[in-house]
Image (cartoon, rainbow, N blue to C red; front, side):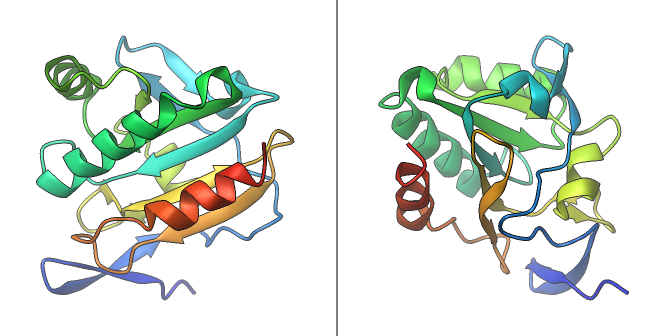
Length: 169
């Protein structure tokens, strides 16, 4: 039985799916990009992947998180795939990224099947949103770092995530 919870608006809510384990093989996922094209984990084969997970692009903390990782991604070039995943519609992600100059992240939508949310344990069942967090996957698709924020309104530990990322390069 799953008893993992996050706090959203002061209320504890249950997370669906399994907790990710460091060293485990990262599950394949099926998402949509901002042009409605299917995207899978295997599309980033042989790259280190930093996955920034957030509830909704239309909130201030999510905006901060995406700006921070967009800024960081610029210095890594092609060595790292920076993915930003939410349940937002691809159209909303495209609008936000265009308006805000977010061009170093591959923004992806899990709205269709909640495939990522379920397989990676980030799906907030009652709200059909994703919890906030960061996952780092090495070139061989092994999970090397996981942070699921216990309080949705808090920002990820950027320093810890980036430090973990640098050890894989």
